[in-house]
Image 1 (cartoon, rainbow, N blue to C red):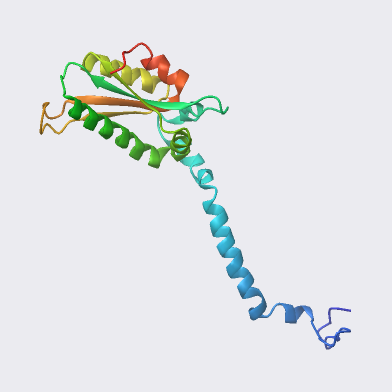
Image 2 (image 1 turned 120 degrees about the vertical axis):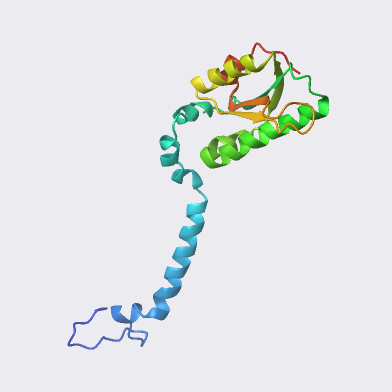
Length: 192
């Protein structure tokens, strides 16, 4: 037998070594196993970061519809649209700078709130389209329409150091979202 009662001594096996159950559980035998198990568990947990965000996604107000923005099939893409106001008469460099602010602002927000959407957009090449709108009123309507269908949006409000007044809303970022959803909001606007 490989086990022994409390009054009997462990019997030796044919190999000459006595390995009862109590000898198998010596600290030098199981501590390395616990350490290795902990390390593997840590790395396996990091390999699936989205499971921890499932609860957060549902708790964000107004953001529950973002799940529908991530396409299920590989043939659908995600894109972001940057809407530039025409009435501000910004120069090319100013427009480029404001578009960069809009894209990085949206990126920073999505890193916190919807990293899986951001990751899929990155895997897709981070497509961005730049279009124009007439004025602040049209920009407000676009932002509202995007939010009504659950698309993320971000507005750049200028500091007023160069070409426009402080607090002017210069660029609206919409998405990333599926092309069909983004186009339903911005599809009729002109490219810059």
